[in-house]
Length: 219
Image (tube, rainbow, N blue to C red; front, top):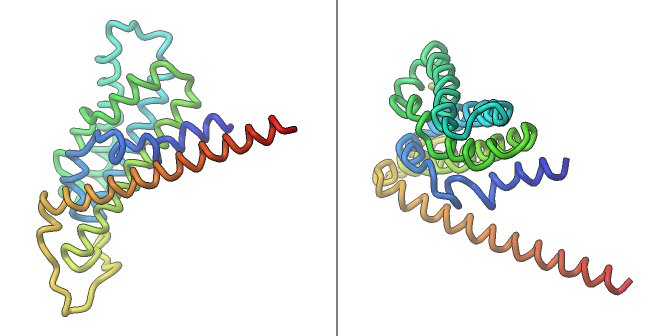
């Protein structure tokens, strides 16, 4: 259980696909103008990533190494099709907003990267933990980015037609936050904050390990 938790937590912070590994940036910056779009993109990535790595891990002993990449793509494309058709049927407005970025999940570096780097070499339970952790890490960052950009860039947060938050009328929203320059600026601050947090957490873990070792040696 501890190993499963450790793999899951890596995707949230130390190996976060966006703030640390810097993969999957194109859809992140493109759809994070709205919390609504960012949220459902995150849900889609969690579903596709987790299901794909679980299936890849289940079939890893039966897939020849020479054809593993085409097999990965077929697996990912199958789950992306499920997401695409489901969103088109039940969330048409969100589907229109996300547009081409839903089918492009097939080529997302996060999905194929985790299938190749982790799921193809590890058992199903750990692959599921990796998929959930990476997907959750991606979702946390993209939703936070969308929250900042939409709230401060438009002065309100609208989710499925309902206004959740809004600034007073005197607030003049800087529209630059809804453009790519604003996305890069906000994301840069988020990367800096994530690196600071990981550095601080890593230092604390090293100090704790060293302290425990000294105490055990003294005994």
